[in-house]
Length: 230
Image 1 (cartoon, rainbow, N blue to C red):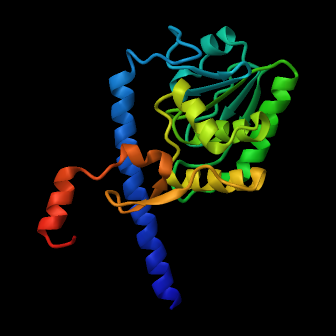
Image 2: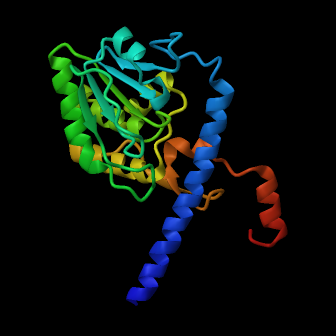
């Protein structure tokens, strides 16, 4: 029984990683197609794709973490959510906080929500600005920002997601992270505004806010019907 359970867990992890690759490929395509023309509400600058979520919180990708960005936005704290990248402090006076989590549906990020949100709030209360980043500014760093907006801006997960999505359309926390964001919302407010639902096309649970991005194509439905599955 234990061996069977392990096999089932391994299959589930493989499925989640495979689906996450589909998500990642679509995100990469979105990033490439929009890199030169995307307008970010809140801030569009020649410095690149830098998204100002609040007066004290900025979300971006690793490629934009440089002295020019730090100076232009008066950054006083940096939260790195990409442990696979080398550490490269840019200013001695800037606070550096590293979150050791890889971008996988199996990774546990929930434990980092409170410490990161508390740090962002503390920096903000002192008049400073925090820059949060991961490799692409899509999954890990976006999850941290959503957690902060829930805890200190009192937004529901759905409100926080829609808010950040408007300012950075490419965000897409992986499904494992979204499950933990749902759990965190429950801890904070006692209820949930986003739920995991089974998606027929990818054959696994995804956040309901992703449903419109992964609808079952008509050709897929016809093929399933032809094969006698419906």
